Image (tube, rainbow, N blue to C red; front, top):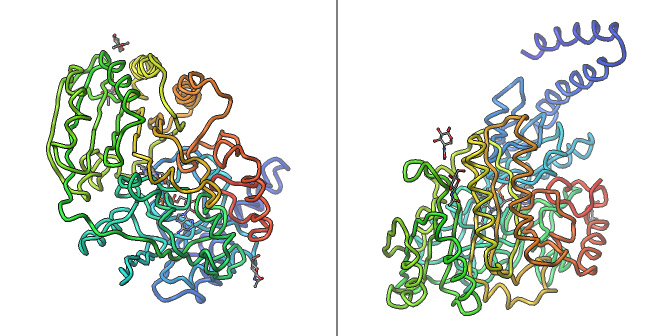
Length: 507
Ligand SMILES: Cc1cc2nc3c(=O)[nH]c(=O)nc-3n(C[C@H](O)[C@H](O)[C@H](O)COP(=O)(O)OP(=O)(O)OC[C@H]3O[C@@H](n4cnc5c(N)ncnc54)[C@H](O)[C@@H]3O)c2cc1C
Ligand SMILES: *[C@@H]1O[C@H](CO)[C@@H](O)[C@H](O)[C@H]1NC(C)=O
Ligand SMILES: *[C@@H]1O[C@H](CO)[C@@H](O)[C@H](O)[C@H]1NC(C)=O
Ligand SMILES: *[C@@H]1O[C@H](CO)[C@@H](O)[C@H](O)[C@H]1NC(C)=O
């Protein structure tokens, strides 16, 4: 297969060389890439464990191996190494470094940020097979870098344990954590990153190190908030918690029309200072033509970690804003993702080749009338451009008590005080003719909220960032934090090999 591929390429190269300068460079690049991919197979292959798999365009299905949650501004790869051991990662990095090939760890493939598109023709190091979870005696769990949220929730639940992990089942467990990591029980226990006790990290030069408060404490600090910039984490040991004896989650889910937006958000604003750590909300503007084909709707889930009797005082007002539907009931922790449309079988977990561009903004509060302006733009634009009608406008209100109680300088997580995480997710089948309209739509939804804040600073969650934000938006406006991250980058990753996901140093 190799030689039959080489031959026509060689002829092509010869023939374009005689055609002129403008195309011969492109053809030469193609030629060297295909050679590079087969070299990777031949040279790196023997160094890997027996279960590792190398895939490239000649030997396998690259489209399947590089499938992502969203495809706008995707990274591109000339080969994929599906590792089976930690040492496979070390060998792959050593090989990539020796040949100056860029590399990127990929787990569940939900990374969205545009900086990923700076990865061109590199090696994708797929770590998904390293997903072992071990529950230790001392209320900790050791979790390999390729585990997912679903896996951690299920494994721990079977042992009557839980920990903070992302709310969507198909997303990786470590990807969110390395940038903070929001989850259902963060109000009680802090962010996912706040649970890390120690980590094993493969640095840019392939060296494996431990990081904890006592070993490589600077790296440990950076991993919790800016981790994607510092290494491939093969394993973390995290705090876990006993599930309370009566773990009930009472919920109510409401569907409203746009007419209820003002009341709904005014009420959220009224209670935001007093909500207990047990209470979470999750609201989405969306189109559901089966219910109403004339206007965008508002979905709202309120989840309370306790019985209906304790939740009632918080939920009662939301029943009075004329919902067109209410669903209520009680469930348990592992069911929360499916309950809010974030389960493994829900649409959100089916990887389609679709653009999903997110423009996040952390909010302290929302001024009167502003959510309605957002609704109006959402409603009007998705009506005007049906191709954008699967877009979503999310407002996530996970409680923050234990998140805020962590001292700001103890981790690289810069943004802890915000109660609401707002984000449009502009969703459409790839169509270059729509890219401008789509991005302007997302930017303006965010801008409406940002302008109303009345501050020039814009706060964006690193794991939702679109990649247009200033570095301070993501890693904090206090100068020392970005300065410290940059200094650590110089020591730990002098060649800036980890530069594709919300880079601290762009090169
Ligand atoms: C549908 C959806 C729901 C989400 N829900 C939440 C949520 O509830 N809470 C939350 O905090 N965030 C959430 N996010 C954002 C999420 O944190 C990021 O998308 C995260 O980067 C996804 O990780 P992944 O493994 O799925 O993606 P990938 O694209 O595989 O990885 C993302 C980045 O993390 C790096 N990375 C992954 N694993 C490792 C590792 N072991 N060591 C070093 N680097 C690694 C990769 O190199 C890449 O740069 C959500 C995103 C989506 C799309
Ligand atoms: C939503 O948009 C549609 C189509 O433009 C419009 O007819 C309707 O009045 C809008 N609804 C609201 C509540 O603004
Ligand atoms: C989007 O628009 C198309 C075309 O008008 C329609 O068929 C589809 O049902 C709409 N989908 C949503 C989610 O509104
Ligand atoms: C790898 O990088 C780390 C951090 O800069 C350094 O301490 C270590 O000595 C390096 N190892 C090798 C083998 O160069």
